[in-house]
Image (cartoon, rainbow, N blue to C red; front, top):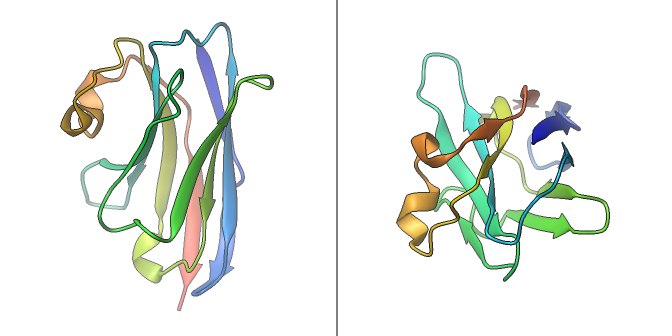
Length: 127
C-alpha cells in the first residue's frame, strides 16, 4: 500500500483544515488507518485512528472534540477534519496503515505498529 497525504497549509488559530490520505492498493478490512504528527524537535505522536471495517475511531486527548477522522471505502481515502486549530497543532502530519489492526485502542497510538507511511504534509497554525 502506498499512501499520499495532502491538504496541509498555513492557517490562523481557530481556523480549519482538512487533510486527506489517498491509498493506492488494497486496504483490507482488518487495517487500522492512522494519522500521526511530528513537530520540530519532538517525537511522532498519535492523532487519530479508524478501523477500516468497523469504522471504529480513536483520538488523542489533545484533539478530541476538534478533529474528526473519516474514511471513504469507495475512494480509498482517509480524511482528517481539523477544526479550532491551535498553534500547538503545528506539525508535519502523516497517515499510516496498520495491517494487523489491533482491537486494543492503546496499540493504535504506537507508531511501531504501523507498516506503511505516507510522506507527510505540513500544517502551520499561526497565532
